[in-house]
Length: 260
Image 1 (cartoon, rainbow, N blue to C red):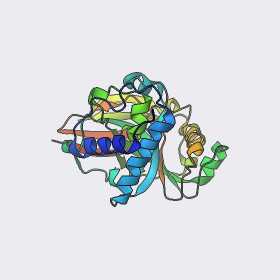
Image 2 (image 1 turned 90 degrees about the horizontal axis):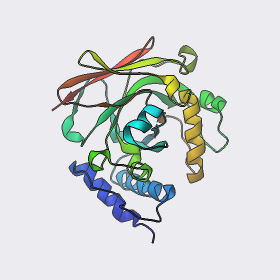
Image 3 (image 1 turned 180 degrees about the vertical axis):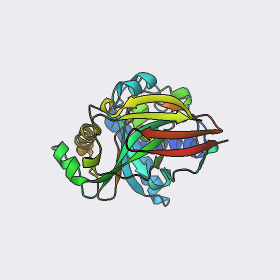
Image 4 (image 1 turned 90 degrees about the vertical axis):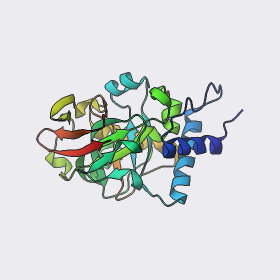
């Protein structure tokens, strides 16, 4: 028995809009597949765009072992990023917008050319990248207590919540993304540390993986898209009334206030 894509997509939209987590998305459906889950995500995105939103990029998640261990998902997830999910830095982000959020630090790639296909290489990623900026991603599951598997997080757009881009763009020749320490700082105290090498050895390699993976769905990326390759450190739970900063050593930082 195949899943009802339209029904599941609507439940996810309602859970997001009402900030009311679901107990489960698919239950114990025996015939589930990764492709089924991604079809649900695409239906959610289709409905959001039809209602006036816009696709602005794509994300890769759970690529680092620290993230897989934290949330019990043993393979990467991926999903669309919508324009409505991008929040300017140094401004207030309201806790009322999320259910059970965490924050991650990752470099964000802004593209100057098209990118994708099953034969994508690191050279293609370098050629298509205009610049990179520090970014913080807020992840938020629509499943209560993050009791998720790969099918759940794929249907749920990679558990995406928001993206905050920093304002210190760098060319790829100006940063060493294969070995760059980073930290998440909450109210002046380091809450998590990591290195971009945890992102599949290098974030460029992670984006190659993503391009090849989504090519089977006919997906590629376009000029102007923002692509984020996954966190370089363990996600940090967000607490209302705190100030959050993500810092890459020798590069820059990006901040927001998480308000009640």
